[in-house]
Length: 419
Image (cartoon, rainbow, N blue to C red; front, side, top):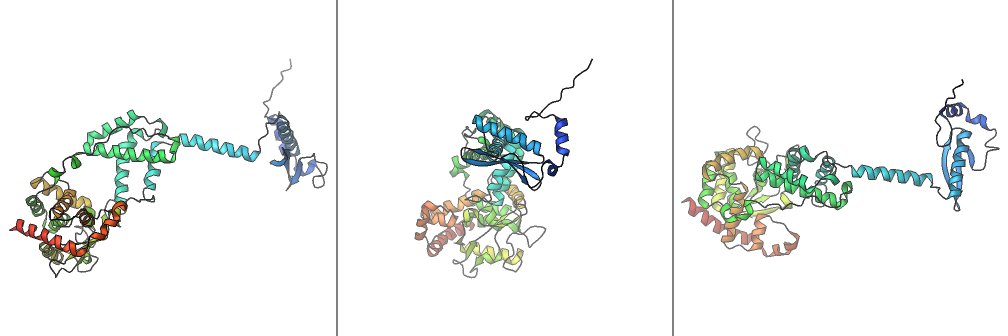
């Protein structure tokens, strides 16, 4: 009995054995004399065979082949498609294939992949975020979002998944839970905006609490006695940090970013000023100076009683050069103190005077007392460095002279408490 062995054949009907034989033949032996005798639609090109067909009045190149046999098979295939009306130019076919692959890849974008793309965009967007803010987002994503959602495609994340992620973060505290919810909302809104991963609607449906800091502002503001008590409870080399944050309404990063040269006219009580032109980003990698939040560069007047404390602090703790940090690292006096270092001191101080008080409450205290001294909303915004395009024109009504008058009133209040 003779057993016939069947070989699989490709789309041209050629078996693997036949294709190997054709591939070993020299293309130059197939024809002689610069393409002479080749079928119409096949031409020689650098020793190979180029196939072309005409379709609807246009000529299309359909590929280059090593042997004449393959070129003829390709020509017959494409001519048949032209007759049947199913012909698609190879260039268009490659474009469609590329688009299909891109669409498939887009649908598979995971939360982990998108989170990194989103975080990287925060530094270069229309409103670039500070390195410290970006580092905070990265920490929230790594610690609370990726463990549960990282491997899920964006389009497969459900509102229930979001609620579970936020609920899990609650184990680390209400503050962590709110940060996770806000980060998820911002991250998915950004994905929807550009259609990342084919996402059309955000799965973040939950209502995000603002927390107690906004709900009980009056209770959050320390009293005059508490501010002085908090300053006194700090180590001597950082007592001034509390007073500057309170009486000049500075953010903690702005306090740490101060340098000796930022203070002017220390020998003229009532006219002493401090310029806020940077903040220290100790959470950035690597730590570095950066612009103040929202580019809120400003110069504010320092109360006379506080100016004397500033001079005493500079004389005792700060290097003589203008770039020397006012609050330096315990390890390197030429480098600013980190947020963690001053935070540890602050936590110990507030535990004795006002447990749970955030350092930012000092800034809120300063602006509140400034308003009580008679400042207008525009003057409060100027001193606090609140920058908003909608109210930018209001700044023209505020002046340094007016700031001196109002700060003098702050000084009276300050000296009254100290007596």
